Length: 550
Image (tube, rainbow, N blue to C red; front, side, top):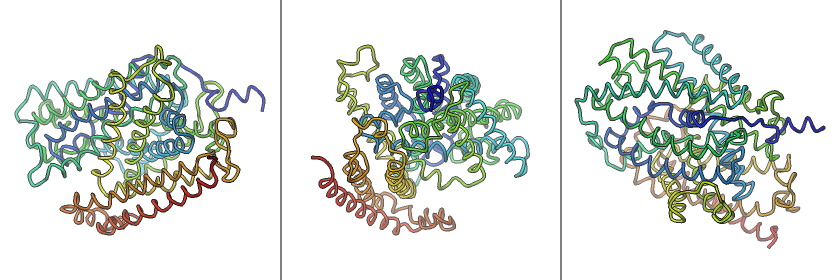
């Protein structure tokens, strides 16, 4: 391959663009929030008071520590791939691949859901048959693929326009709601007949979802010329997002009330944010707000393509995925294969139910932020503060660093158990099996990091993997086993009062997920699965002692 061809492949072939800080803020805002849409489900499931408490508390114990952590890591390692790159550098390519795989699956399976929601909102304004709805979905996917093929700068410009529209709409909603304050938005804190723990379990998944997506911009960091603006943008956008959630929620509840009937925008039944406009302004204003809901979902999808299309790209650049994926366009230096494949997956998935996909995706975010916390600690040891002159650091010295690293880990582990046994089993089971298996397959076929850097990533001739991988896989299996084993003991008392009835109702006719209808059966799956993975960990540890260099 000649020199010109080399410049059109991999990270080296990417074209760096100057992106304004406003555009970076807009991209992050669209990736994480794009309005307060989704809060309605929290209100109905865990109560108005608990919803508001979650939105406040998670901003400080989840969103802010993550943003401080992402700011520091992106400052010291401003590279394409974000979480994947940081984990790889901190803990080796096996763990890096796991994080890359989690995020790739999360982006690919959930991307289409935003298109589905946007068209659902549209169908509440204009009557659409199934064929028309599908045609619009496919048209939207193609349109946003074309925008992303132009480059990250164009994505940022569109995100800025979308963000401005959404922020203006929710600012107007806040003013209208405040002017018609009739109810206490905090009452009740917990719905009658529901325990505080059950309320928290119902809401924590939604809350974390509302504050997830901070790493999207880091996956394209290698294409941003002024990447040092990224930490500042992240710290600006946290309060912006928190206020976008809190103020409309508080004033919406205070003006409309009837919290038990709150439901998502576009529903023909119930009340919600759109009711503020329909009740106090008029039907035309309500239709205008539905249009903003459509824009909000499309803005998330737009940034979803930007971040998600780069993950398999960086894996391919490290020889952990088929090499064709690392091709970039000649004119704009965009990883076009990733954009096209993510778009094709979206076209396929917009036609199906997303129950299974959502169950899998929740674990992606939780696992990623756990590894981010560990990467912060490890990177501080590998690259001391004394060697980071002029770079962004987490405030508060060493104590601040540990707080920002450990808090997201604790919240993620709590969410893993409180979010539901169905999410736990399907998500954990999927990634526990697919991640390590695919790593071994791709490592054997494509060579991994050892192919380009055999000194830093030496191959163990006995296993064909990077030296130390069997020990890393042993640790991975042990963590999965312990999480599952602990879950089998603590989830039963947590969910016993409502779980058996809920899972029967939810999954009896759910096809391949029908096994989730058996509550006691799920407890047995976690117990047996946990013991099996612990046994696998012991076997791998024994193998590691024999085949790895001491």
